[in-house]
Image (cartoon, rainbow, N blue to C red):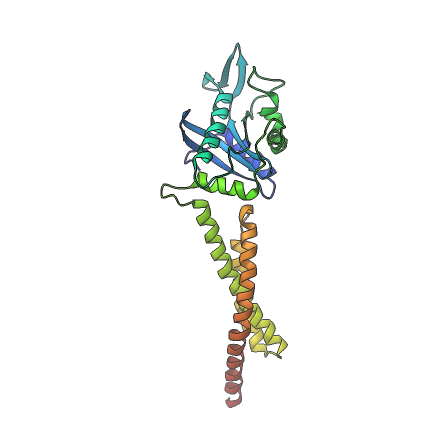
Length: 288
C-alpha cells in the first residue's frame, strides 16, 4: 500500500509469509493510520486470516536486543533505540479503532494481535515484560511464520468473534479505500468480473458454435474456422488468469454466467452464421 522501497528484512519476512498463505489468506503492506490516540501510525504488514483475525506485524532489521529495560537495534550504521513492541501494539489498536469508526463496519472491534518479526535476530525467551516469546518471530521462525501468526490469533485470550472471510474482505476494502470513498479493492474485483465474463463468454460462444457445428456434420471449413478463432482466445484466457485467491469465487461465478451467455449466443447466432458461410464456400467451389 505504501510507496517506499522495501528493506532486506521486509523482503525476507514478506517472502516467507507469501509462500505460506492459505487460499483465503492475504496481506496488505505498509498501512498508515491517523489514529485518534496514537497519532500517525505505520504498520509494516497486516495479515488477514479468515476465522482467526488480523495480525499487525512490525518488522525490525539488524540485531534486536532488550537491555536494561530498553530496546536496541544494532545495524551496520550503529546502534539506535526503538520499541518494536510498542509500534506493533499501536498499529493493532489503530487498526481496530479505524474499522470501528467506519459506518460500513458493524462487527465490533476486530479480533487481532500484534507481532514483531526480527529476521536477523535469534530469540530464546521473552524480551522484557512486554515481549512475549510467542509474539516474537525470529530468524529461525521464518519457515513456520504463518503457523505462529495463526496460533497467536487463535489464542484463548481473544474474546472477540472470529471474523469470516467476507468480513475480512470488507475490512480490506475499508483500509484500501481512497480519498473519494471508493474501494480500490472493490474496483479491482469488479474489473476482474467484467474481464472474466467477456473472456469466458467469448470462449463458450465459440466453443458452442464448434460443438453444435460438429453435431450437425460440420464441414472442414467450419471446424478449421472454429479452431483458428479458439486458439488465440485460449491463449488470452491463460494469460489473464492470476493468483489472486480472494477473487477466485467471483471469477468462478462470472465464468458460469459467461458459459450460459456464450452457449446461448453460440448456438443461436454463430452456428447459423457458420452454416451460411459454409454454404457460400460450397457454392463458390461449385462454380470453380
